[in-house]
Image (cartoon, rainbow over all chains, first blue to last red; front, side, top):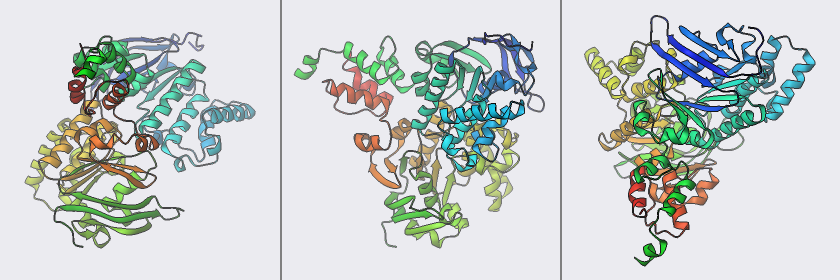
Length: 286
Length: 286
């Protein structure tokens, strides 16, 4: 149980979760899910559909009422709390809930200090991580004196030093302008590609799902409604409507015009319309 | 201050410099807003948009020290000549981070706190609470602890507790950042109803430019503390250079039109909504 194998697949079997009294909400209902090591998936669904509960269960913050969650064959909530960050990291919706020390450097080093890593090793890893995430120049500052986007990267850096196999990212783009939201998603893409970290992101930003993610898990009422490629999922507006999700604007235009395959980006839509077009000279002649 | 009767907000050459800042955050802004207008504010992070909204709501410079030059008039009266109590009856502000505005233990108390302070009779308060909770679809949250709510739920509670006060002017700073797509559309429709039916003046900052393009009467673009554009939505998105400088994307449905035009198709009117886009592009499809 103590050794984590090289295979870091996430396997969820018959997962059930009910919040304790007084809420007693049945948040996750008999859910099965498998995410292979190195995947980049998005979990979407309405507020209260169970997305955040699922991500807290995956990260070991909550213990299943029934069923199991394993990463590399190891039951997540049985991994000791100080070792869990080496398996799975959870990026909170609000970075203010996650950073708490007096300088950026100390905040990022915290997890390593907890597992008694030699000082020179800590220095090296923290330095490399801060440089990699473009935070080096902020290392002496208090985390609450820097911008929210930077603070979010500090939270991510604090997880990365632990070398996790899976990062669960809860609404990474909340409170960010669209350009910064893209920056965070680009960072996740890079961590996914360069380090092979599995990324599970919870989001309401459908345009970002289209741009960055291949597989989408659609949740509603504590169950998985759809689990497939982004294009396939956004081709099913009726099912998405059950969990109050709308395909992005381009896809909605594509659906209404009956374009097939469904366009997801502006470029795809333009190409599709041109291909189906009344010959240009006719249009000009009118 | 002489001005036409229906001008409810007037900014007269307003600049604002925070105490200990070297340069102004807001620079020489002149604006007028008529009663019942729905204004959308767009701009990148750090552009001064929250400062501008806080100035209009009177939070600045009442609460945070800084130097204001020029003047902001609400119903013809300078905000500097009004007490915060007077201002808060006229202008309701829903802040970007709902947590900074919730402080009661229970949702049911949070919503009616403002009315209780005005000494409104109990039976009226009870009725209003039911009406507002239903309007924002949160009756199931009334007995919950505010701290325990999800981000989206907190946002709806913050909206409810401001809405119940029936201010003449509503200022929203990113009101739907944590809501799912249906929650966002619902809030936008509610805000639109406030303006169109109740004649309430609304100013909304929002990252979801598609929603603003659909509902707003006018859009302001703020960049580096200056208002660089003040246009109706359809004209607004034709100024591509100004948008690019502010890192603002044209709505995807309009972007399709630009590209089709560039490729030789006759797109007479750039669509702003999915419905308009379908109508516009339908004629090109065989």
